[in-house]
Length: 188
Image (tube, rainbow, N blue to C red; front, side):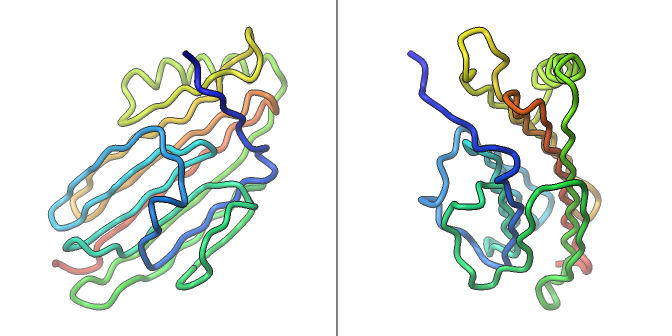
């Protein structure tokens, strides 16, 4: 049995980050993994139209990030960035207060390519998905069309966690890539 799914247009995707936790009922998640690095923990989720990451220190959410449709209702309280995913952008923000001070870095880019190039990229991402930290293949929009794919690789660093995420949008021959780095600025 296949789950009905329709991925939002990449033109309607936004990256949003908060200095607070977000409620699970705001997202329909398809996969989840947890990564620990000392006192820093990452809760990484793939959702229908992107992702939802939370980075916690001592069990307290310090930053939450989502890639979601622009019309998805998300709170304004303690939002630090909300940007449409167009072209490429990068941001850095100091977060928290000692002894839990850290820096949140995020960059994203969207690429729209011709169909033949997209086909090769999709095949490459399908291979990468086999070794990814987490990957979800969604049902295709058309019976014989390529399936939207979301995957990410996460890595623990000496004083932080980095996550590389990829989301494909076959109907638009587009790929969204994000890189998120959370670095502890002091020992906790």
